[in-house]
Length: 479
Image 1 (spheres, helix red, strand yellow):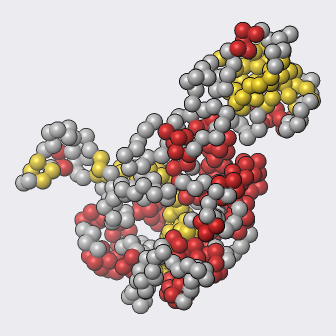
Image 2 (image 1 turned 180 degrees about the vertical axis):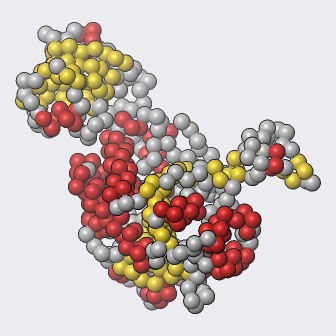
Image 3 (image 1 turned 135 degrees about the horizontal axis):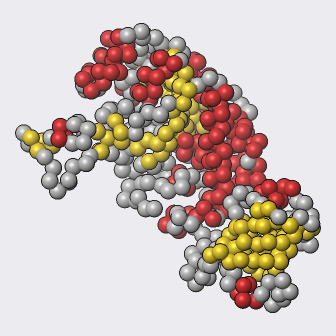
Protein backbone atom coordinates (compact mmCIF):
# COMPACT_ATOMS: atom_id res chain seq x y z
CA UNK A 1 0.00 0.00 0.00
CA UNK A 2 1.24 3.52 -0.77
CA UNK A 3 -0.09 7.03 -0.56
CA UNK A 4 -0.56 8.37 -4.09
CA UNK A 5 -0.94 11.83 -5.57
CA UNK A 6 -4.16 11.85 -7.56
CA UNK A 7 -2.34 13.04 -10.70
CA UNK A 8 0.06 10.07 -10.65
CA UNK A 9 -2.67 7.66 -9.64
CA UNK A 10 -4.97 8.63 -12.52
CA UNK A 11 -2.09 8.52 -14.98
CA UNK A 12 -1.09 5.01 -13.90
CA UNK A 13 -4.63 3.71 -13.55
CA UNK A 14 -3.57 0.35 -12.12
CA UNK A 15 -6.79 -1.54 -11.54
CA UNK A 16 -6.69 -3.76 -8.46
CA UNK A 17 -3.92 -1.83 -6.68
CA UNK A 18 -4.52 -0.88 -3.04
CA UNK A 19 -3.74 2.76 -2.33
CA UNK A 20 -4.07 5.36 0.39
CA UNK A 21 -5.23 8.80 -0.75
CA UNK A 22 -5.40 11.93 1.40
CA UNK A 23 -7.29 14.87 -0.11
CA UNK A 24 -10.16 17.32 0.18
CA UNK A 25 -13.79 16.65 -0.65
CA UNK A 26 -15.13 18.59 -3.61
CA UNK A 27 -18.60 17.01 -3.63
CA UNK A 28 -20.51 14.11 -2.14
CA UNK A 29 -23.65 12.61 -3.63
CA UNK A 30 -25.51 9.33 -3.62
CA UNK A 31 -28.20 7.29 -1.95
CA UNK A 32 -28.64 5.88 1.52
CA UNK A 33 -26.60 2.79 0.69
CA UNK A 34 -23.79 4.13 -1.49
CA UNK A 35 -22.00 7.50 -1.71
CA UNK A 36 -19.82 8.96 -4.46
CA UNK A 37 -17.17 11.33 -3.14
CA UNK A 38 -15.09 13.53 -5.47
CA UNK A 39 -11.61 14.04 -4.02
CA UNK A 40 -8.94 16.52 -5.10
CA UNK A 41 -5.45 17.03 -3.65
CA UNK A 42 -4.40 19.93 -5.91
CA UNK A 43 -1.92 17.89 -7.94
CA UNK A 44 -4.14 18.10 -11.03
CA UNK A 45 -7.46 19.38 -12.29
CA UNK A 46 -9.19 16.00 -12.26
CA UNK A 47 -10.96 14.62 -9.21
CA UNK A 48 -10.75 11.02 -8.02
CA UNK A 49 -14.14 9.42 -7.50
CA UNK A 50 -14.43 7.40 -4.31
CA UNK A 51 -17.20 4.84 -4.01
CA UNK A 52 -18.21 4.32 -0.36
CA UNK A 53 -21.03 2.00 0.65
CA UNK A 54 -22.45 1.05 4.03
CA UNK A 55 -20.98 -2.45 3.77
CA UNK A 56 -17.49 -1.01 4.21
CA UNK A 57 -17.93 2.48 5.68
CA UNK A 58 -20.10 3.30 8.66
CA UNK A 59 -22.99 5.73 8.37
CA UNK A 60 -21.47 7.80 11.20
CA UNK A 61 -18.33 8.42 9.13
CA UNK A 62 -20.25 9.24 5.95
CA UNK A 63 -22.43 11.77 7.78
CA UNK A 64 -19.28 13.69 8.80
CA UNK A 65 -18.10 14.07 5.21
CA UNK A 66 -19.11 17.30 3.48
CA UNK A 67 -17.64 19.59 0.82
CA UNK A 68 -14.34 20.97 2.11
CA UNK A 69 -13.60 18.17 4.55
CA UNK A 70 -10.19 16.48 4.45
CA UNK A 71 -10.23 12.69 4.48
CA UNK A 72 -7.88 9.73 4.12
CA UNK A 73 -9.26 6.90 1.99
CA UNK A 74 -7.83 3.40 1.74
CA UNK A 75 -9.16 1.18 -0.97
CA UNK A 76 -8.73 -0.61 -4.29
CA UNK A 77 -8.68 0.94 -7.72
CA UNK A 78 -11.30 -0.36 -10.11
CA UNK A 79 -12.45 0.43 -13.61
CA UNK A 80 -14.96 3.25 -13.36
CA UNK A 81 -18.58 2.37 -13.99
CA UNK A 82 -19.42 5.99 -14.82
CA UNK A 83 -18.22 8.54 -17.33
CA UNK A 84 -15.53 11.17 -16.78
CA UNK A 85 -12.81 8.98 -15.30
CA UNK A 86 -11.05 5.74 -16.16
CA UNK A 87 -10.67 4.51 -12.59
CA UNK A 88 -12.39 4.98 -9.27
CA UNK A 89 -11.46 4.07 -5.72
CA UNK A 90 -13.54 1.49 -3.86
CA UNK A 91 -13.19 2.52 -0.23
CA UNK A 92 -12.71 -0.01 2.54
CA UNK A 93 -11.60 2.53 5.15
CA UNK A 94 -12.12 6.29 5.54
CA UNK A 95 -10.68 8.53 8.26
CA UNK A 96 -11.99 12.07 8.57
CA UNK A 97 -8.90 14.20 9.16
CA UNK A 98 -10.71 17.52 9.30
CA UNK A 99 -14.40 18.35 9.05
CA UNK A 100 -15.97 21.32 7.23
CA UNK A 101 -19.43 22.22 8.46
CA UNK A 102 -21.73 22.83 5.46
CA UNK A 103 -23.37 25.85 7.09
CA UNK A 104 -20.00 27.57 7.59
CA UNK A 105 -17.75 26.48 4.72
CA UNK A 106 -17.88 29.30 2.12
CA UNK A 107 -16.82 27.27 -0.94
CA UNK A 108 -19.93 25.32 -1.76
CA UNK A 109 -20.19 23.50 -5.13
CA UNK A 110 -21.52 26.45 -7.13
CA UNK A 111 -20.05 29.33 -9.15
CA UNK A 112 -18.47 32.10 -7.08
CA UNK A 113 -17.50 35.57 -8.31
CA UNK A 114 -13.84 36.57 -8.52
CA UNK A 115 -14.54 39.45 -6.12
CA UNK A 116 -15.90 37.04 -3.50
CA UNK A 117 -12.96 34.68 -3.92
CA UNK A 118 -10.49 37.54 -3.36
CA UNK A 119 -12.17 38.10 0.00
CA UNK A 120 -11.40 34.48 0.94
CA UNK A 121 -8.00 34.19 -0.73
CA UNK A 122 -6.91 31.78 2.01
CA UNK A 123 -9.36 29.23 0.57
CA UNK A 124 -9.52 30.05 -3.13
CA UNK A 125 -6.62 27.69 -3.94
CA UNK A 126 -9.19 24.90 -3.52
CA UNK A 127 -11.22 26.02 -6.54
CA UNK A 128 -10.58 24.64 -10.01
CA UNK A 129 -9.76 28.08 -11.36
CA UNK A 130 -7.12 29.04 -8.82
CA UNK A 131 -5.53 25.63 -8.60
CA UNK A 132 -5.15 25.70 -12.41
CA UNK A 133 -3.74 29.25 -12.37
CA UNK A 134 -1.23 28.41 -9.65
CA UNK A 135 -0.07 25.19 -11.33
CA UNK A 136 0.66 27.21 -14.48
CA UNK A 137 2.36 29.88 -12.37
CA UNK A 138 4.53 27.16 -10.81
CA UNK A 139 5.42 25.77 -14.23
CA UNK A 140 6.40 29.22 -15.50
CA UNK A 141 8.62 29.86 -12.47
CA UNK A 142 10.69 26.77 -13.19
CA UNK A 143 10.63 27.37 -16.94
CA UNK A 144 12.15 30.83 -16.38
CA UNK A 145 14.99 29.44 -14.26
CA UNK A 146 15.58 26.58 -16.70
CA UNK A 147 15.71 28.98 -19.65
CA UNK A 148 18.38 31.22 -18.17
CA UNK A 149 20.38 28.47 -16.48
CA UNK A 150 20.61 26.45 -19.70
CA UNK A 151 21.98 29.52 -21.50
CA UNK A 152 24.72 30.37 -19.04
CA UNK A 153 23.00 33.16 -17.07
CA UNK A 154 23.73 33.49 -13.35
CA UNK A 155 20.86 34.17 -10.95
CA UNK A 156 21.56 37.20 -8.73
CA UNK A 157 19.62 38.20 -5.61
CA UNK A 158 19.41 41.99 -5.61
CA UNK A 159 18.37 44.06 -2.54
CA UNK A 160 14.75 44.32 -1.50
CA UNK A 161 15.61 47.31 0.71
CA UNK A 162 17.40 50.04 -1.24
CA UNK A 163 18.30 53.70 -1.07
CA UNK A 164 17.61 54.33 -4.76
CA UNK A 165 14.49 54.68 -6.89
CA UNK A 166 15.51 52.98 -10.13
CA UNK A 167 12.72 54.55 -12.16
CA UNK A 168 12.91 57.97 -10.57
CA UNK A 169 9.13 58.11 -10.26
CA UNK A 170 8.96 58.45 -6.49
CA UNK A 171 6.32 55.73 -6.11
CA UNK A 172 8.12 53.84 -3.35
CA UNK A 173 7.24 52.37 0.03
CA UNK A 174 9.43 53.83 2.77
CA UNK A 175 11.29 51.51 5.14
CA UNK A 176 11.91 52.67 8.70
CA UNK A 177 12.15 51.44 12.27
CA UNK A 178 11.17 54.82 13.70
CA UNK A 179 8.46 55.05 16.32
CA UNK A 180 6.02 56.88 14.06
CA UNK A 181 4.58 58.69 17.10
CA UNK A 182 8.00 60.11 17.93
CA UNK A 183 9.97 60.69 14.73
CA UNK A 184 13.29 62.58 15.17
CA UNK A 185 13.33 65.95 13.43
CA UNK A 186 16.27 68.17 12.53
CA UNK A 187 15.97 71.61 10.95
CA UNK A 188 12.27 70.99 10.36
CA UNK A 189 12.76 67.70 8.45
CA UNK A 190 12.83 64.03 9.40
CA UNK A 191 16.34 63.12 10.55
CA UNK A 192 16.96 59.86 8.70
CA UNK A 193 20.50 59.69 10.07
CA UNK A 194 18.84 58.34 13.22
CA UNK A 195 17.00 55.62 11.30
CA UNK A 196 18.08 51.97 11.19
CA UNK A 197 20.16 52.31 8.01
CA UNK A 198 21.28 55.86 8.73
CA UNK A 199 19.59 57.15 5.59
CA UNK A 200 16.22 57.23 3.82
CA UNK A 201 15.39 53.79 2.38
CA UNK A 202 12.52 52.13 0.54
CA UNK A 203 11.33 48.83 -0.88
CA UNK A 204 12.80 48.26 -4.32
CA UNK A 205 10.91 48.97 -7.53
CA UNK A 206 13.54 47.14 -9.61
CA UNK A 207 16.71 45.09 -9.25
CA UNK A 208 18.03 46.43 -12.54
CA UNK A 209 20.66 48.89 -11.34
CA UNK A 210 22.28 46.34 -9.04
CA UNK A 211 21.88 43.70 -11.75
CA UNK A 212 23.97 45.85 -14.09
CA UNK A 213 26.82 45.78 -11.57
CA UNK A 214 26.84 41.98 -11.63
CA UNK A 215 26.50 41.72 -15.41
CA UNK A 216 29.50 43.98 -15.92
CA UNK A 217 31.62 41.47 -14.05
CA UNK A 218 30.04 38.12 -14.94
CA UNK A 219 28.63 38.72 -18.41
CA UNK A 220 25.07 37.42 -18.20
CA UNK A 221 22.83 37.54 -15.13
CA UNK A 222 19.14 37.61 -14.29
CA UNK A 223 17.14 38.54 -11.24
CA UNK A 224 13.76 37.08 -10.29
CA UNK A 225 12.42 38.71 -7.18
CA UNK A 226 9.69 40.76 -5.51
CA UNK A 227 9.33 44.44 -6.33
CA UNK A 228 7.04 47.11 -4.94
CA UNK A 229 5.37 50.19 -6.35
CA UNK A 230 3.24 52.59 -4.29
CA UNK A 231 1.05 53.58 -7.22
CA UNK A 232 -2.45 54.41 -6.04
CA UNK A 233 -4.16 52.52 -8.84
CA UNK A 234 -7.06 50.11 -8.54
CA UNK A 235 -7.12 48.85 -12.13
CA UNK A 236 -7.09 45.22 -13.25
CA UNK A 237 -3.46 45.69 -14.40
CA UNK A 238 -1.77 46.95 -11.22
CA UNK A 239 -0.39 45.43 -8.03
CA UNK A 240 1.59 47.05 -5.22
CA UNK A 241 3.71 43.91 -4.75
CA UNK A 242 4.74 41.86 -7.78
CA UNK A 243 7.60 39.76 -9.13
CA UNK A 244 10.02 40.88 -11.83
CA UNK A 245 12.35 38.97 -14.14
CA UNK A 246 15.26 41.20 -15.15
CA UNK A 247 18.11 39.85 -17.29
CA UNK A 248 21.20 41.99 -17.94
CA UNK A 249 23.80 41.17 -20.59
CA UNK A 250 27.24 42.74 -20.99
CA UNK A 251 28.49 43.65 -24.48
CA UNK A 252 24.91 43.54 -25.82
CA UNK A 253 23.13 46.17 -27.89
CA UNK A 254 19.44 46.87 -28.43
CA UNK A 255 19.08 44.33 -31.25
CA UNK A 256 20.49 41.55 -29.07
CA UNK A 257 18.21 42.67 -26.26
CA UNK A 258 15.18 42.34 -28.54
CA UNK A 259 16.39 38.92 -29.67
CA UNK A 260 16.63 37.73 -26.07
CA UNK A 261 13.19 39.02 -25.05
CA UNK A 262 11.52 37.40 -28.06
CA UNK A 263 13.24 34.06 -27.57
CA UNK A 264 12.45 34.01 -23.83
CA UNK A 265 8.74 34.78 -24.28
CA UNK A 266 8.22 32.34 -27.14
CA UNK A 267 10.07 29.58 -25.28
CA UNK A 268 8.06 30.07 -22.06
CA UNK A 269 4.70 30.05 -23.82
CA UNK A 270 5.61 27.01 -25.91
CA UNK A 271 6.47 25.22 -22.67
CA UNK A 272 3.08 26.10 -21.16
CA UNK A 273 1.27 24.85 -24.28
CA UNK A 274 3.21 21.58 -24.19
CA UNK A 275 3.05 20.87 -20.46
CA UNK A 276 -0.14 22.41 -19.05
CA UNK A 277 -2.76 21.15 -21.51
CA UNK A 278 -5.48 20.17 -19.02
CA UNK A 279 -5.31 23.39 -17.04
CA UNK A 280 -5.20 25.47 -20.24
CA UNK A 281 -8.23 23.68 -21.64
CA UNK A 282 -10.18 24.37 -18.44
CA UNK A 283 -9.16 28.04 -18.31
CA UNK A 284 -9.87 28.46 -22.02
CA UNK A 285 -13.41 27.14 -21.57
CA UNK A 286 -13.85 29.37 -18.54
CA UNK A 287 -12.83 32.44 -20.55
CA UNK A 288 -15.14 31.50 -23.41
CA UNK A 289 -18.05 31.40 -20.97
CA UNK A 290 -17.11 34.84 -19.61
CA UNK A 291 -16.77 36.32 -23.10
CA UNK A 292 -20.37 35.34 -23.94
CA UNK A 293 -21.61 37.80 -21.32
CA UNK A 294 -19.65 40.75 -22.77
CA UNK A 295 -20.62 43.20 -25.47
CA UNK A 296 -19.29 42.29 -28.89
CA UNK A 297 -16.83 45.20 -28.97
CA UNK A 298 -15.41 44.23 -25.55
CA UNK A 299 -14.75 40.59 -26.38
CA UNK A 300 -11.23 39.27 -26.80
CA UNK A 301 -10.29 38.79 -30.47
CA UNK A 302 -8.83 35.33 -29.76
CA UNK A 303 -9.44 32.34 -27.55
CA UNK A 304 -6.83 31.65 -24.86
CA UNK A 305 -5.14 28.90 -26.88
CA UNK A 306 -5.16 31.06 -30.03
CA UNK A 307 -3.61 33.89 -28.04
CA UNK A 308 -0.76 31.70 -26.76
CA UNK A 309 -0.08 30.24 -30.19
CA UNK A 310 -0.20 33.73 -31.71
CA UNK A 311 2.90 34.57 -29.67
CA UNK A 312 4.60 31.18 -29.60
CA UNK A 313 4.37 30.62 -33.36
CA UNK A 314 4.88 34.12 -34.81
CA UNK A 315 8.02 36.17 -35.17
CA UNK A 316 7.86 39.56 -33.44
CA UNK A 317 7.53 42.58 -35.73
CA UNK A 318 10.07 45.33 -34.93
CA UNK A 319 8.83 48.87 -35.46
CA UNK A 320 10.26 52.24 -34.40
CA UNK A 321 8.18 54.45 -32.14
CA UNK A 322 8.12 57.12 -34.87
CA UNK A 323 6.74 54.67 -37.45
CA UNK A 324 4.13 53.44 -34.95
CA UNK A 325 2.91 57.00 -34.32
CA UNK A 326 2.49 57.55 -38.07
CA UNK A 327 0.51 54.30 -38.38
CA UNK A 328 -1.78 55.20 -35.46
CA UNK A 329 -2.41 58.73 -36.73
CA UNK A 330 -3.70 57.34 -40.01
CA UNK A 331 -5.71 54.46 -38.55
CA UNK A 332 -9.04 53.75 -36.91
CA UNK A 333 -9.62 50.69 -34.72
CA UNK A 334 -12.76 49.86 -36.74
CA UNK A 335 -15.29 51.50 -39.04
CA UNK A 336 -17.60 52.66 -36.28
CA UNK A 337 -15.30 53.62 -33.44
CA UNK A 338 -12.23 55.81 -32.94
CA UNK A 339 -9.67 55.39 -30.20
CA UNK A 340 -10.82 56.35 -26.72
CA UNK A 341 -7.52 58.20 -26.27
CA UNK A 342 -6.42 60.58 -29.01
CA UNK A 343 -3.00 60.13 -30.58
CA UNK A 344 -1.39 63.30 -29.25
CA UNK A 345 1.52 63.19 -31.65
CA UNK A 346 5.20 62.43 -31.49
CA UNK A 347 6.49 62.44 -27.94
CA UNK A 348 3.35 61.12 -26.27
CA UNK A 349 3.22 57.79 -24.48
CA UNK A 350 1.00 55.12 -26.03
CA UNK A 351 -2.10 53.76 -24.35
CA UNK A 352 -2.90 50.05 -24.12
CA UNK A 353 -5.55 50.36 -26.84
CA UNK A 354 -2.95 51.83 -29.22
CA UNK A 355 -0.51 49.02 -28.47
CA UNK A 356 -3.19 46.38 -28.98
CA UNK A 357 -4.26 47.93 -32.27
CA UNK A 358 -0.73 47.60 -33.62
CA UNK A 359 -0.58 43.95 -32.56
CA UNK A 360 -4.11 42.70 -33.22
CA UNK A 361 -5.29 44.80 -36.17
CA UNK A 362 -2.37 46.29 -38.07
CA UNK A 363 0.56 43.86 -37.97
CA UNK A 364 -1.33 40.80 -36.66
CA UNK A 365 1.74 39.55 -34.84
CA UNK A 366 3.55 40.44 -31.60
CA UNK A 367 5.32 43.79 -31.88
CA UNK A 368 8.50 45.29 -30.45
CA UNK A 369 8.55 49.09 -30.47
CA UNK A 370 11.97 50.74 -30.16
CA UNK A 371 13.72 54.13 -30.15
CA UNK A 372 11.31 56.04 -27.90
CA UNK A 373 11.46 59.77 -27.15
CA UNK A 374 13.89 60.32 -24.29
CA UNK A 375 11.43 62.49 -22.34
CA UNK A 376 9.06 59.57 -21.65
CA UNK A 377 11.76 57.06 -20.69
CA UNK A 378 14.13 56.51 -17.75
CA UNK A 379 17.48 58.25 -17.24
CA UNK A 380 19.61 55.13 -17.73
CA UNK A 381 18.61 54.43 -21.35
CA UNK A 382 21.27 55.03 -24.02
CA UNK A 383 20.81 58.29 -25.91
CA UNK A 384 20.70 57.99 -29.70
CA UNK A 385 22.74 60.20 -31.98
CA UNK A 386 19.67 62.35 -32.77
CA UNK A 387 19.65 63.56 -29.17
CA UNK A 388 15.86 63.07 -29.04
CA UNK A 389 15.38 59.33 -28.72
CA UNK A 390 16.80 56.54 -26.56
CA UNK A 391 17.59 52.89 -27.27
CA UNK A 392 14.48 51.68 -25.49
CA UNK A 393 12.16 48.85 -26.45
CA UNK A 394 8.73 47.55 -25.39
CA UNK A 395 7.28 44.16 -26.30
CA UNK A 396 3.54 44.28 -27.08
CA UNK A 397 1.15 41.31 -26.83
CA UNK A 398 -2.48 40.83 -27.85
CA UNK A 399 -5.02 41.40 -25.12
CA UNK A 400 -2.76 43.21 -22.68
CA UNK A 401 -0.42 45.49 -24.64
CA UNK A 402 3.02 46.01 -23.10
CA UNK A 403 4.50 42.97 -21.35
CA UNK A 404 8.24 43.78 -21.45
CA UNK A 405 10.14 47.05 -21.18
CA UNK A 406 13.88 47.32 -21.68
CA UNK A 407 16.77 49.18 -23.22
CA UNK A 408 20.39 49.35 -24.09
CA UNK A 409 21.88 51.07 -21.05
CA UNK A 410 23.81 54.33 -21.21
CA UNK A 411 27.43 53.25 -20.75
CA UNK A 412 28.98 56.69 -21.35
CA UNK A 413 29.73 58.61 -18.16
CA UNK A 414 29.16 62.18 -19.33
CA UNK A 415 25.97 61.36 -21.21
CA UNK A 416 24.60 59.56 -18.15
CA UNK A 417 25.45 62.51 -15.91
CA UNK A 418 23.68 64.80 -18.36
CA UNK A 419 20.48 62.73 -18.29
CA UNK A 420 20.54 62.57 -14.49
CA UNK A 421 20.88 66.36 -14.34
CA UNK A 422 17.93 66.79 -16.74
CA UNK A 423 15.79 64.59 -14.49
CA UNK A 424 17.03 66.09 -11.20
CA UNK A 425 18.60 62.86 -9.96
CA UNK A 426 21.46 63.70 -7.55
CA UNK A 427 24.79 62.13 -8.53
CA UNK A 428 25.67 61.43 -4.88
CA UNK A 429 22.71 59.04 -4.57
CA UNK A 430 23.99 56.87 -7.43
CA UNK A 431 27.77 57.35 -7.14
CA UNK A 432 28.25 53.58 -7.35
CA UNK A 433 26.19 53.40 -10.57
CA UNK A 434 28.35 56.14 -12.08
CA UNK A 435 31.49 54.23 -11.00
CA UNK A 436 30.42 51.47 -13.37
CA UNK A 437 30.98 53.95 -16.20
CA UNK A 438 34.39 55.01 -14.85
CA UNK A 439 35.98 51.59 -14.48
CA UNK A 440 35.88 49.35 -17.55
CA UNK A 441 32.64 50.57 -19.07
CA UNK A 442 31.14 48.67 -22.00
CA UNK A 443 27.84 48.48 -23.90
CA UNK A 444 25.20 46.40 -22.11
CA UNK A 445 21.44 45.90 -22.21
CA UNK A 446 18.54 44.33 -20.35
CA UNK A 447 14.82 44.35 -19.76
CA UNK A 448 12.11 43.77 -17.19
CA UNK A 449 9.32 41.23 -17.52
CA UNK A 450 6.51 41.51 -14.99
CA UNK A 451 5.90 37.92 -13.95
CA UNK A 452 2.25 38.43 -12.99
CA UNK A 453 1.61 40.08 -16.36
CA UNK A 454 3.05 36.96 -18.02
CA UNK A 455 0.93 34.62 -15.87
CA UNK A 456 -2.15 36.71 -16.62
CA UNK A 457 -1.49 36.37 -20.35
CA UNK A 458 -0.81 32.62 -20.09
CA UNK A 459 -3.96 31.90 -18.08
CA UNK A 460 -6.38 34.34 -19.70
CA UNK A 461 -7.43 35.79 -16.35
CA UNK A 462 -9.07 39.20 -16.61
CA UNK A 463 -7.60 40.67 -13.43
CA UNK A 464 -3.97 40.57 -12.34
CA UNK A 465 -5.10 40.15 -8.72
CA UNK A 466 -6.17 36.63 -9.61
CA UNK A 467 -2.77 35.36 -10.75
CA UNK A 468 -0.86 36.07 -7.51
CA UNK A 469 -1.81 34.13 -4.38
CA UNK A 470 -2.27 37.12 -2.08
CA UNK A 471 -2.68 40.43 -3.95
CA UNK A 472 -1.47 43.67 -2.39
CA UNK A 473 -3.43 46.66 -3.67
CA UNK A 474 -4.47 50.11 -2.34
CA UNK A 475 -6.31 49.69 0.99
CA UNK A 476 -5.81 45.91 0.88
CA UNK A 477 -3.13 43.81 2.55
CA UNK A 478 -5.14 40.88 3.88
CA UNK A 479 -3.75 37.44 4.66
